Image (tube, rainbow, N blue to C red):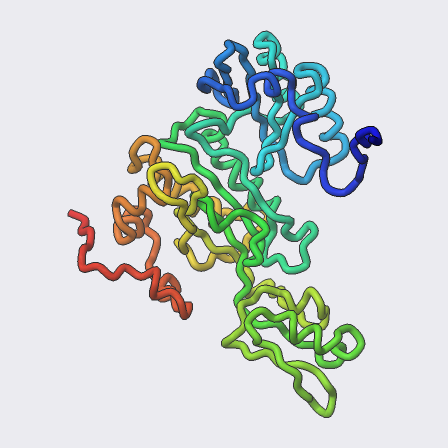
Length: 363
């Protein structure tokens, strides 16, 4: 009988994550007894064997330079045998096994401008998309808005200000939603408000009409002739302003400095603790772009955070707090105006409507 062949080496798919784990995690995999937060930004994991591991969390700007990545790698080599990880919300976590190295690591991070925090009942780093720096369909900037919001809410990140529970903020620069705006406590979403402008004189040279028509998810684009030229037309009432058409046809521009802006959504979460996961719902339909510091957007987010911090119970997420007090009370307490845009007119929206005669009345 032939010998068992050696495991085949392949470059198909990612390498197995286990080879990158610290030895303490490999040894105690699935055998953790409890965890606690000894100080802001530090999570202590205690195994049943008595082994301990500290995760030190720092915020990053998401779009990282080579110098930043090398800095993180050097710090990981210096303090935690090269072991670090990035969270789904763009935090970097250093996995430390020697407690005496925690404070020097935090000092080095702060010295280089990377604050430590975002653990437990706090605001962690904002997950966001590309924005004007890269994305062709962006209705607003991403990095600029996120920087402005986090500068204002920083005391909720480093533990200076307290919250009832963890609070996740997300940002997407258009409704294609590369960010987690559908499932975050507070979400900022860039919105276009007019249909694409068609450059009929450029359609033939820049676009393929069948591909442009098929790119639209709502069937809002169809072939047409304008002044004898083969082109396309947009049925505006069907357009959802997603910019898929612009992706395949640069002659259909969607960006508009006057009409593009932001919207605010609230109440989403992924966790199934206390209740099932929840989708975000509209709070503020439109805020105009006002770079470079987006003052109106920052004030709107801060208002929601402060009202939530004051009124929510311990461990209660934003969506759970709103469900408890009722949406009328949410609009009342935040001072946000309820408009016709808050009424969902999607054809399947009826299944989400409240169909009971039981209402919460504010005293």
